Each structure stands twice: as C-alpha cells, then as structure tokens.
Image (tube, rainbow, N blue to C red; front, side, top):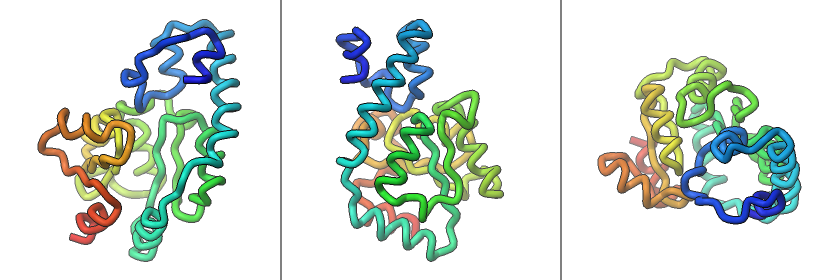
Length: 186
C-alpha cells in the first residue's frame, strides 16, 4: 500500500490484486509508463527495507530440508518482481532449497496462467501431471496448478487462506507445515 500511496493511488482493493504480478496490477490500474516505473521503484525500496523483517519459521526450514533429503526437486514460482524475489530469498537463505526459481521476469503470463508452473516443470525436467504438487496461498496459485494439470494444495497461513476453502471446498488445504508434511508423506 505504501508504494501505491507514493504515486497518488490512495485506496485500492488489495484483494483483487493478490497473486498478480506488479506489471499486471499496473495494467489493471491503467497506469502510464511513468507511474508504473515510479510504483516499481517505490515497491522495491519498500521491499528492500521490509524483507529483513519477514519471519522465517523453523518448521518451514525442517519441511524444506526433509523434502530435499527425500530427493524431491523443488521450484519456487512467484508473480513477484525478480529483484524482490531474490532479496527475499537471500534474506531467508532459501537458495539452499530451490533448484529452480521462476519470477514474473521469466514468463509472458504470470499466475493464474499455467505458464510459470509449466516452465518450472520443464526446468526441473519433470512432467507436469497430477504427481506434481503445487503449494499455494492464493486463488491464482490454485487456478494455475489446475490449468497445468498439477495437484494443488492450499495453505491457510497465507494471504488468501480462508478464501481458498470457500472457492474450492474440495481442495486439499492444510493449516500447518506439519499437516502439509503428513499429506506429502502419504
């Protein structure tokens, strides 16, 4: 929100932009090139300051280590800006876990389009089918997985958790990393 306020966009319905790339948000807001560039600049300034404040949960670290030790190749797929993504990855030391990282810079279409997930599968050298799992916290994540023929799992600790359950009542949703691990061990 702070980045939007810096360019004069006072109030936006944040919910309608969850899971979208910043470029798509700028298109949806009908921002010109100057305001788009300003928004990206302020967003990245805000992001650099705040990514150090993101809390990394020990349980997530344990889950990622277990997945790696189990030989499961992992990809991180996000609609975030590339620089923003790598700032966060560096701050949280996530580069140790993910063989492939896909950001909005790597694709023409971001989620909910399946392109980023299909590219991740290609780079991991795995076939995109129901044996692949995509874990996501937004409706865009789930729609992308379904369109890519990948099994989606919704997590309720993210930004759209409760909405996932309402939008997809039959969707496998988990409320903790322990519950996610329990499902993955099956």
